[in-house]
Image 1 (spheres, rainbow, N blue to C red):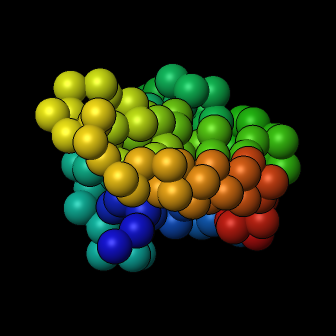
Image 2: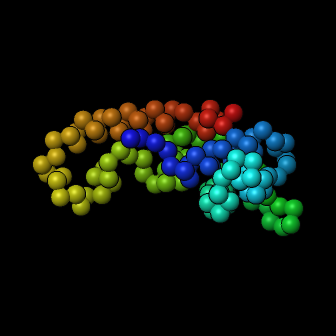
Length: 132
C-alpha cells in the first residue's frame, strides 16, 4: 500500500497550520502538537529538519517558534518528500542494488514505469497546493 509517512503527514499539517497564521507570527511545536494531537517530540524533530532545509525558519528563545521561510509554490511535493524521507520509490531495488532477485525479477520494468509516473506527478504538484 502506498502512503505517506507520519513524518511527512505531520510536516504537511504543520505547514498548513503556519500558513493560516500571520506570516510574521510564530508557531510553536507545542501549539501544533496540542491542536492536532500529534506527538510533540516527533513533530519537533520534523520541524527542526524543515528548518535545516530552509523550508521554515526557527526562532530561538522563550517566545520563539517557527514560521514559513520558503516559497511553498516553488517546492514540488517530490522534492519535499525526498528532503524528509529520502528517494521516492515504490520498491527498494530502485535505490539499493543488493536485492538477490534483481536479475530474475519480472516486475521491475513495469513497476519502474509506475514509479516514474508517480515521481512525475509529484514533481508537478507544489507544497502550496497541499497546504493552502
